[in-house]
Length: 360
Ligand SMILES: *[C@@H]1O[C@H](CO)[C@@H](O)[C@H](O)[C@H]1NC(C)=O
Ligand SMILES: *[C@@H]1O[C@H](CO)[C@@H](O)[C@H](O)[C@H]1NC(C)=O
Ligand SMILES: *[C@@H]1O[C@H](CO)[C@@H](O)[C@H](O)[C@H]1NC(C)=O
Ligand SMILES: *[C@@H]1O[C@H](CO)[C@@H](O)[C@H](O)[C@H]1NC(C)=O
Ligand SMILES: *[C@@H]1O[C@H](CO)[C@@H](O)[C@H](O)[C@H]1NC(C)=O
Image (cartoon, rainbow, N blue to C red; front, side, top):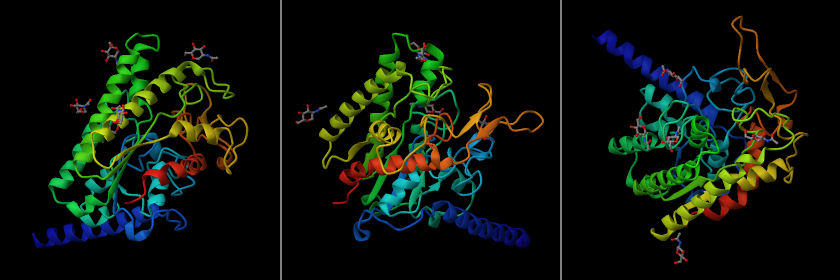
């Protein structure tokens, strides 16, 4: 009995030690260029959403845990849908925080509260506000998880008083709908309404739990370059415009919903993180970070439409190619920016973040 307990204790101490090293490694974003003065820095960051924000919540059967994901950071596959850092890491850097620990890894360890020091990342690749074609906890379930932590007193009211939230919705709901019903379906517009309504409910709920400032992504520009599952015209020369009206409609509704939420609340806690403008600016090479032509071509690409980045055939031979220099590509795979792509998006977003993520 004692022996078992000692073993258990030793194991959990060791696990926690390893986990803290690992998360420390994951969290280190070079430099300490805080844009928020440290005395008024938010204490915690709570992250919800999908693969644009996930830093390691999907289970290890998923592609983000396979080579060559993560090769540039943390140096091996570790659950980010990129060759390196994703937007969450840059938002955390902006706030002067370490990138918060992925909830799933934390939950399956027995490490307790200390590792939640900079907040928690609940974002799970492939998810949406509703259940999607991919599996994983939808945003409601992700918010439930924060609620459980609060019930277990993982955070105090004071923690929450200076907390902020980053919510990513890149379009898995829309993708799921289009895949089943097609773009011509008359229900598409009303479906987008239900997505934005549910998103607004979620934002309000996060605020209701005590989080003070909440940034939510608008949809990035879509096209054949981003969603080749929908259309197989993959010249990567230009985005297919078919879905641009879908994206504009979503972004318009989101803008109205956020305005309404702010009207109903003191201090205007909600704001939109404009991925449409920032992706567009980065892809047009407008910033200081330049991408090679054609900027829409992903660095890591399946050798044919049956394959995707990270696929192997039954003999274990790789069925994808990687570009020579991932820093030259905005997109890492067909759906996700590379680390350098995210860095360019972050750079285009700085003014946006400075305007809203300032503190009192
Ligand atoms: C979220 O997932 C849960 C569990 O699968 C499900 O019961 C619930 O209806 C989903 N919520 C939404 C808004 O789709
Ligand atoms: C891991 O994720 C896959 C795909 O989402 C799912 O089918 C599988 O059941 C999950 N496995 C575990 C152990 O959670
Ligand atoms: C397809 O459209 C129908 C009718 O509008 C809707 O009930 C269903 O949920 C849609 N499918 C998906 C996957 O959203
Ligand atoms: C764009 O996508 C739509 C829908 O899949 C397709 O019908 C159309 O041919 C594509 N256009 C171009 C220019 O690739
Ligand atoms: C928010 O309030 C402003 C000023 O009162 C008003 O002009 C605007 O129409 C409101 N917006 C929404 C979406 O309710």
